[in-house]
Image (cartoon, rainbow, N blue to C red; front, side, top):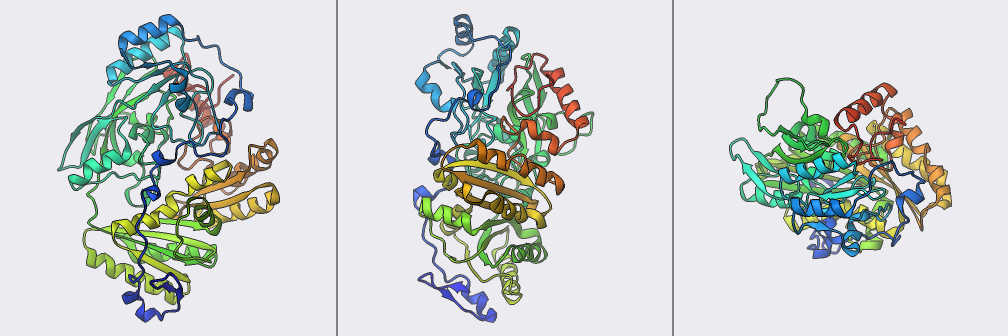
Length: 525
């Protein structure tokens, strides 16, 4: 059931489990195995996608076109940081999956909130549409232009403003890279409450704008709870200052919540305050093999019962997910020949206490027949090797072909049923159908690959996937947002009345509609 030094499967009596689980030597990760998105940008098989407007037959709204006079004005605001060279703009006009492409003619790189304010004031007066862009790691086309929208990058807004080592409140600019913040905090004994596979590239402002969930939402909750305050520039250039670091503030409406998950459609987040927990001193990761999804659910239930306060992540992957990372990334699967895999992470402040709880959990999982094999890692290198199998699935899928991605939430017991039905529905028309995700918050990542984009395959997937999800009381976007690709499907998860109020809010804050048009909210036209 557990693995020996040469990775072969051993049948072990569960009474010997506690002394045996740490005998497996996982290979140290190579640099290429570190799960940072910056190392695999533009990995899709589709080298240069068609223009988004052509592929999706979108009509340009009546915005002004950028002129020579506009460029001169921007140069006065941010001298030397106005990019107009086509070759420099190429990477910013395409998403990293290479599924959508715009043709913006100018990229602006402000350093301060005041510069963003001046830029948006001018754009609003001129009727110039803009697209805010952070690390450009989104998966629904929200961070690239559809037509020639002006790109405003937060890449140079990367300063930590302050950190309170008593409360754990971090204040920083929106362009700080998530992993850079983690490194900054680690020295101080703290960590970010958010962790993503794209942590080496994504910007914290973009994380807020998409309300990113990530791998440890089970432990630390969503950004709607950990973000204490933010600063944003509205479409007319006015600055909204809600940048406080109070845990409790019950005065009026909580305006920051409007911008968390707004995907750049209401304004540009320029700074934020976020509550950071203490960095755990003891971390363990177990990878477990299961015969079927019913066993996966039983493992998850046992996790919550036995690991309680030290449980920080509980992820699942199917065998197709594992095959994909082995085939395209040459990663080592220490537990071959399992239908499903569960990755469990614990983190706490007392290594001995956590180890005892983990061993009790593992023993019960074995005795109950929930798992068929497993391995445990306790040092950082081996932990990263196991996490790489989960975090790098997205990268591997991009190497498999054109990817149709669905990020769904639903009752946890229904998670894999959709994958099975989709696989049967598509048959041989799909190259690969995989399912993986976050058990702790009922989030399924359903991915379908094909050699190239196909309207026929797309019509077989949509609206089928959305109808199935809605029928089972789920959401069509759990953590990726709606962006460009899903905005018109919002009615599967929100009532017409709710969408109408969103449209009213959008019109109130952005009457000219210049902020990230064609994204998130259906137009009222």
